[in-house]
Image 1 (tube, one colour):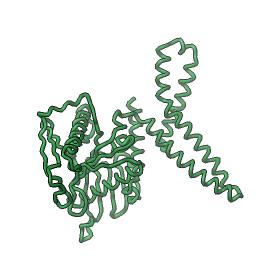
Image 2 (cartoon, helix red, strand yellow):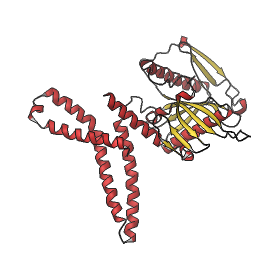
Image 3 (cartoon, helix red, strand yellow):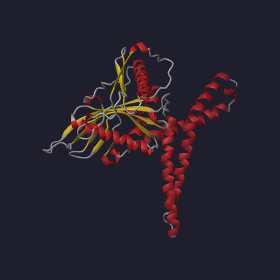
Image 4 (cartoon, one colour):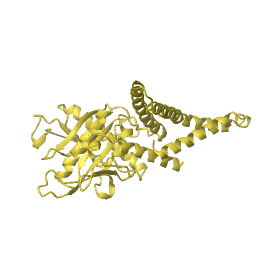
Length: 358
């Protein structure tokens, strides 16, 4: 467990005991206002405290099981190793639940998402890297038993994506992936490079919570320009003989969305309207808090100053998250969907910042 998270939980455990002791005193019992305040704080602490106590019990079981590894009985050692593996899996699962319970809740955390990946600086290599990012998030989704639906894509000449927009459906998708928004930079010798030169390229990722119904969002049909066109596949060839693809422009904000994944124009229009609502909703959130990154801006800045993560293949292997300084040399594992380390560290940092603000 992260030392900072453990220290925070130990403080919470101490505070929990302190509150419990105070609630049993006559002074607090006779002061209804103070008793209510302490009970509210206790209720807020209890979910993470119960999980932490379970975590400590499993830790103790691991230590006890490790003692059995010194036994002379080979059968006993085999059983101990099996139990140890099971305890370690349990410990990892509990830690994930602790992080979820400790971080301040976002009302959008349980929502599905639209994810947009766009090739930025670097031409064809940036498009290839956008394809690598799409594969990474696809693998991560598969590991979490989430489902992906491609909404719109623009395939590049070498099999990458100039742009790909897709939906990820599952449990708490936005909670896990909302911090992936930003610029992802890659440094490597591209497949298209014949002279062996190292190129630096970038792709941008935007994560939008899918909103079905938000009271504050009212879209006037008169504010929309709806265009239809034929859906196209790789190389620009038409994949449908009818104008099934839909592009919607919201004139007041100049937000543009498009969808071509269905053969039905009506289905594409419905999906495009959901994307439009999500983008307008995200714009509302950004306007309320100017410090938030503009996740839904289709012209997201892909300059180096906004990068969140670097993927370096040459002259050494290193992936580094610039917000938390989390890094690993196992590039193949990360591109295969193992991005939990980055997500957990950012959640812990977010938890600590929330505590400091309080």
